[in-house]
Length: 217
Image (cartoon, rainbow, N blue to C red; front, side):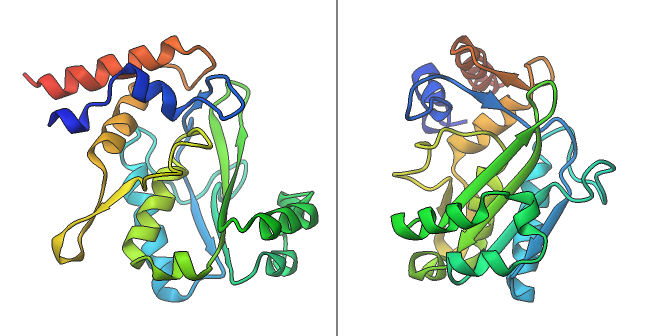
């Protein structure tokens, strides 16, 4: 692993420190079961493949069904936030959907994630809402799909990807996770670490595992 791929403790801590203060980390505690709504067939395939590929970084991977929820990694696409109000079943999943759609439209956001957690604090459900505005429409589909998969893999800080995407575009149109993001994801699912943590010292444990991975045998 190159030095650029091995973020130190401060960088790792920033990935999970909320804008309002406080450290909060959570990872999936079960297999992911993707379901995509409102996407054209090509986009649906790309999103599903990306979710499956990134989920493979965890020991849980993916499954055909969640016995409790059916599907638990849900992605909804719309051309306008207001259109989400017409999606059957979504108001039941997002009870305050009308107000949320108004707020997201007013702020010019183009994506929003909702997480739910089990009794241990592990992620049990992630709902990704995408408003495909001009900015998202300009992204190559593989980049959009892979970035969304990465952002739903952990409870990242709300500031984690404001200035830089979790993915990198290579020559020839190939898309990969940025090395430091891939390194954090691999370390985050170390079975010796907890599924959730509010302790900033958790970042030190993550950074130590990333550093050990970079040293190699």
